[in-house]
Each structure stands twice: as structure tokens, then as C-alpha cells.
Image (tube, rainbow, N blue to C red; front, side):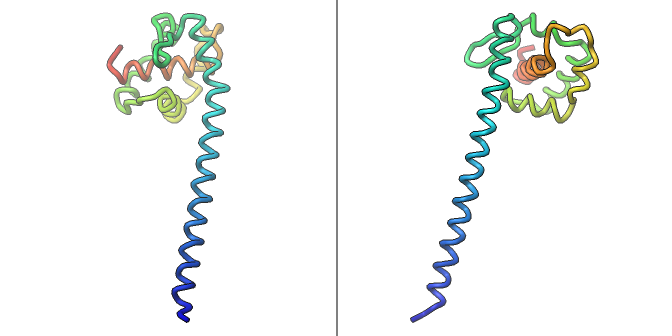
Length: 136
């Protein structure tokens, strides 16, 4: 009997098992991220839509009222960033905003007391989508 073939088959099966376990872990992690997004972000998006800062079509879009809630200096930074990186989804814009600009840019303007930081981040992300799609 050739033990080399048996060892090779066993090794291949163990590699396949590790790959399946890895893919399963990634899928569970993505499900958790989606759940967190839906709990924390979708709730705020619905609130912004009720207040008139966002409009719901096939996806949420920023309205003129929402654009006015953003400081002009921040809009300039967002416009430059959106034209350079071109985010396609609200999640991409959200992550890009956190990496490139940060929360400090949103915290510096005390005139926005009627919006939370989370809502301002969503408005800024939606504004970036509008700019990247050349709608503003």
C-alpha cells in the first residue's frame, strides 16, 4: 500500500477544512457588521428622513435642508475627498470620512446643536455620495 497517497489526501482534506472554517468565520463577521449597521445607522437615517434632512428613494439621499446643516468648510473638504476617492455607497463614504477627515471636523462647529455627531456623519457621507455622482 502506498502511504504517500493516503498522507496527501489527508493533508488536502485538512486544508479544505481550514478553508471552510475561515470562510464561515468571515461570513459570521460580515453578518455582525451588517446587524450593527442596521441597528445604529439605519435608525438615524430614518430619523433624518423624518426631519427632512434626508430623502428616501431607492437609497437615502441628502436634501437641501441636510446640506445646509453641514458647515461650509466641511463641505469643501468633503467635495475634494469625494471627487478624489469617488465612494459608491453610504458605507464606503462613511468609512472614508472616518479615515480621511475624522470626527474632529464635525465637532468643531457648535451651531449644529440639533443634530448628533452620528447624524452629521451620515449627512456628510450622503453629501459625499451626491458629489461623487456629480449631482452637486
